[in-house]
Image (tube, rainbow, N blue to C red):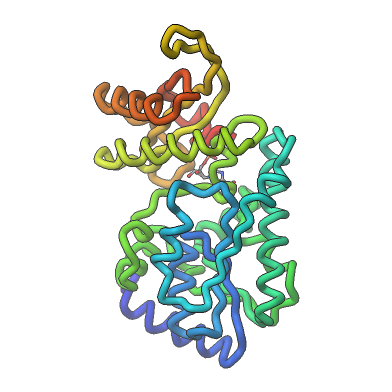
Length: 305
Ligand code: XMP
């Protein structure tokens, strides 16, 4: 286990040593890794660090406001309002890999604009040890390892948490005084709600996914899942009043896991499931049906795309 206090002191000194009086930039997603990397870099560089948060419109409910609040102490924080540009770029895209590609490209374009404006010489990244191992082994191309370093000609790349495991990053986050909402944050995929909407992404489907995810997280929190969320998986017939309606099908997923490589569907109490169903159909009149996913990983994956 890492000695968080000593680690912070060393990491801050190292960043200062490497970057000196130059300017640095970091893509802040609100995840624990980039939040810790940004906070360490801010302690070292102050306003010479430009943290960039891109609101892709694929974030969870209230996430952007919460980022603004949590990182309000960083006066140089840049929030890029890119929701409409992402929705436009994703219009008509149905293939899951194509979606990831479009999101990655758009993200790079948004980040590049701010990075160039800020005249940054250094890129700070929240890469952690398992990211490096997976990338080196070509297991998974990580959005926080590839891509960004190529867009601007940086003098150097600084990765202050490169040797830490996830639980160690959480220890450092607590020691840095970051709120629980960051330090204990459940994993959230880089492409966000896009992988929780099957098929084409529309503003309506995104809103159903966002509101349903919020309800699921709220209801399931007490059962301490590794990850819990909802996805919009199609349309089905329902009854509203005296009428048959064709509404969205929302699938609820709550899993236990150690590292996301394998997972078990969680055995939730019937009352919890019913409360989720009733809140989702009560809040969203265009939802006809709520189902619970009982599939482990394997054979299913955790996300739907
Ligand atoms: P799967 O769906 O592959 O997910 O069983 C395993 C873990 O990885 C997360 N995940 C992603 N994270 N970019 C990410 O940064 C992605 O494209 C991506 N796809 C899945 C997922 O939320 C789960 O924690």
